Image (cartoon, rainbow, N blue to C red; front, side, top):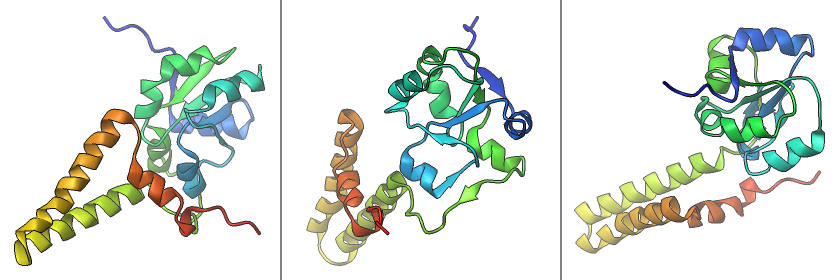
Length: 179
């Protein structure tokens, strides 16, 4: 028998009704670049990397509902999230994907850059494909390109440090624009 989750599930329609009445505080645990591109109106951005200190600083309040994109990140961190909430704690079942599937509105900023991890995936995929094509049609030694990228992915996965993400993060399109 599985132990009960530290967060009580809440569906999108119930959350929408509670948000409209101001009965809950919605916390988006995705990274700031994901939140900047698309989020549920009224949600507070609080990435997992800082959620503990931020929640502790906010103190007691209305019941808290956490969400991510699909619900996976929230489920993986439910005990840690619930630990920092003084009162009731919930999780949006299915995350923002379920919210959108219920035809509920989201705030979208199409001018915000793609999420950093999507940029990494696109860059590595493109460079790998180019490396394979160069290997097939130009010179066998170009096999080093996809091999290097694969080794980089293994390194990033085992250490948590991604050189490609660090490089893309400093690109001009990912820097905040000061107006």
